[in-house]
Image 1 (cartoon, rainbow, N blue to C red):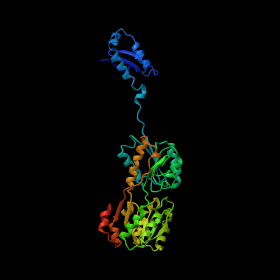
Image 2: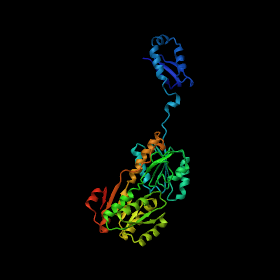
Image 3: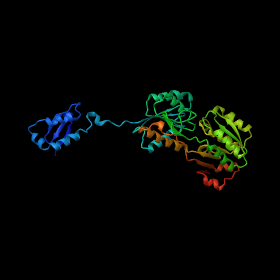
Image 4: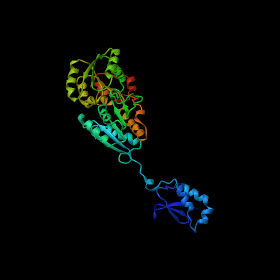
Length: 376
């Protein structure tokens, strides 16, 4: 049987024709082209010329197969490791979403340090650091940038118009100017938002169902957070015959004044819009509600888990894990401008029975059956 093999002893450009042990050097320019084949066919060796004539067809098949070989060092090029740059507002210890993102990537087969390289930058709660950290990540030229938070993503968007961006946020990306439309973002950014303004009316309905006597509800929110929740909630409150009292809280420094304003408003329930600033003060807000015997409803599960009466909204961890699929798709060639912004379609209702008992409220069997989680 005739075969052609490279000769490592003689060098990567040498071809040995078996079984004749006939060697011929091939130049880079030849690259096993037709010129190279003519060289081999015109080669003369008394030991093999007759065999070549008799086995010409087999010989051409061998050489044709050799023509498909990668040439020289190019044959062993390693696969390039994709790189991801992640920017977070707080610290690694305070923000669980860094770990949640890695869980999502791991589910897709990506292991940091093996087949993906992840660079993290944490602003440590200092908003003034975000522009420099975003620019630092951009200089690293990752394949995808992953900002978490509506107060983080705009800095990344300003830092680059070319590197693909996958964001996760509770804000409205349209109001922030990150995308041209939800269905077709059109630029270098897309992602996931767990914002659903329409849920505001549903939360008030649930609150009224559990505490039917309420008539005045404090609406605690950050007015700088880009959403339409207050407008939607006001419409829902009107339909339920409830007065909504807006209370503003832009940051932790406003919390004491906001809580005092709630006291002075003589409300009988509290609705909290989940944002970075309110979630950062979650424990103090829940303690205030419990001390003042105010049924509290919030947007994410943490409010009920920490002692609030109800929460109704998306599972934030699931949203972050799902966002990893967009990172994967962009790694594989998808364009962010063609990937629609995703919003959650499944929402979790959590009920805290301990808080209900402390408030003297009874939870109907039908509501307990609808709840995704009941906290004893």
